[in-house]
Image (tube, rainbow, N blue to C red; front, side, top):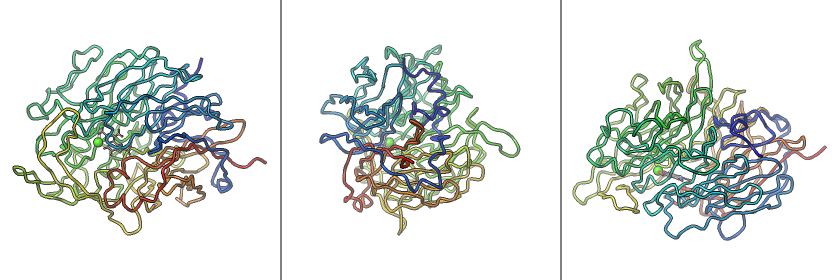
Length: 556
Ligand SMILES: O=C(O)c1cc(C(=O)O)c2c(n1)C(=O)C(=O)c1cc(C(=O)O)[nH]c1-2
Ligand SMILES: [Ca+2]
């Protein structure tokens, strides 16, 4: 039969398998396992490695799934692999036949699959959603989610809620319209679609277009028709409030002078009712985004007592450099604090309005005629204080572990007009380091105080996901090739292993035959080598790769 929607809800409490992207619908990436712990992690050794093979290497950003003795991973170029979880032997491989004209902005990546019943479901770079038989890798259904020739693509892992596959889309750099789609998991038929840009019609259940507030009030003229707001990282689900949370990306074009207004719902967190597709609340982290700060970062539900009051909260480390804690029942700001070295574009967040206090010269200037506008130095860079790589929340320490980066950019605006299937930026940029000794910084954040409790600095930008465990451990990868383990309370580095290529995947752990296993994908890529400017030059020595690595303690 295979996992049911109920099994997926219980994923965080069943350490014998990993059924969801995020290790639980809330995506806390916390494991209750403690067989591998601060005392013995130094002894951990590889159990096996499995290559994705072929000439198709590039960025391997996937988080593996584990079920019934099989590890499922997605690879670059829209591939899926099933490996034996005891030996690493390949069971099957599926490779989507991609057309020549795909337009992913930021490498040919995929972050993971979903599992349900007899199916493995994943999204492709040419904007298809495909369900494979998990035993054979044969296609069960294959749906077109949008038009790749207009710049749509998909890189996120699907979310499964109540027998629906809920997906985001990519293409924010091409003037697409961000969208969340819910489909029947058995057939792939569309149930509802929720556009993220005010003024665009979706097909919602029980509401003709379901857009809240005045249509298009936050966009001039027709700009909402090409407004971006891609939901390119997928979503999390909170059973306590029955809400799904999707971040939305940058508005199109990047040149903000062409679209005065807040440009809802770009660079925001949306809380959506999974039963209808209706937006219950929104919180916009960067109104009128002019830096590609995007806002797509994952929103992780957690519970804590604030000022003596038990609260249902959620946290998001935004690309704009601020760590936000919201009341997840209504989207109200509880606190916001800086988690990076610098934020040149804003002096903090106004706790009453929830809006950033913009600095006077932080925004790149308007072009005049065909001349580019005033260049400004901005920090974080557009690749963000934190990009797509997911943070983790430990129920034991009460801390969030945030994979962050300290860097800046020169950014300027240029004239631009929309053309179907062409980049729609109207901006240029060069990314620059801002510190002598590091770009990457893994930071332990206390969500109650907004304080950084410890940090680990890394020379290259951190671009991989984080895992935390009841063994008082935090795991993350580095572009230099290491998977590393840290003491969750102190940040002390306890173990490392070099996988031979940059690690930009998200680690997982599970228990099998009485032993605890840890797995991560290795394979350098993603946006940094493509867009990293001066920063990317320092990492050209990193070798490409494409392997799954699995670790455990030696027997006996
Ligand atoms: O607006 C979008 O649709 C969109 C999509 C993606 C993507 O799907 O990977 C990225 C971005 N934007 C983006 O801004 C970005 O920095 C980025 C980095 C990466 C990556 O995988 O390393 N993807 C993306
Ligand atoms: Ca983007």
